[in-house]
Length: 292
Image (cartoon, rainbow, N blue to C red; front, side):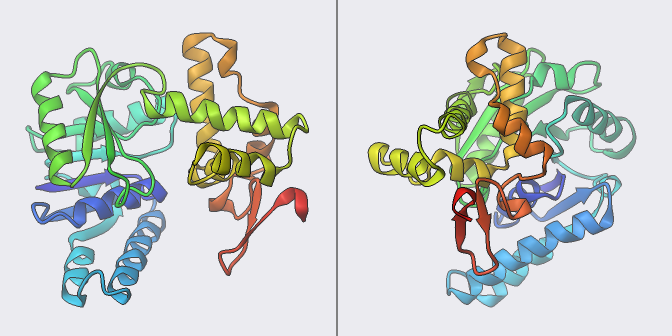
């Protein structure tokens, strides 16, 4: 199977790595709108695989074989793909335009499956007006490690496509959960409002950053507190999901926290920018920003 991943950021590179580690996948196109972006994603994969080799979890030959499957380049390289997984920005117009160009101009394989890694957007809307149906194939970060894949059918997605994507997910060592189309699907419908509420709790002065996170870690046995988790996901992604939930449901309980909007505007997005609710240091330590 030949797989193309569109978008070489954190999620895209992780998804590409997950496919490259599968024996049935012969080639993975890691694509982006600029070569430098694609090369950056490739470098992340190589670094991750090198780390696995250094820890003895992969032998050197196996690690090289995985990396060698990945071909970094522009979106127009994936002409013979059997499966396209789009992991571009969480913006409806960008996703629709991306799929239209891929279907009309790039991918020549008539049997290619077109999937979106969207974390909250309507699969039916993404596929509206396109020649071929779209399916949701939502991975979780870090994609090579996390076991869940949400499989979402739009109103025009054939059942055979759903079955095939579930089968592919199982072969990747994942557990597919078929989800009815709804804003946020399942995991993010529950998880992201919790993060947003944690931001409200902090911004209202109820507890400091460490207190909010420790309360959920020690009181609810969560491995990571909501503010740290928001940093890890990316606060821009958290905001985008909250905005979709709020827009689609018109329910005030999904109103994004004003502090979340402010931080995103200021590019305090979390781990990927080096600062969010925590400041992330080169030695991999972190400090709550309210303690700086």
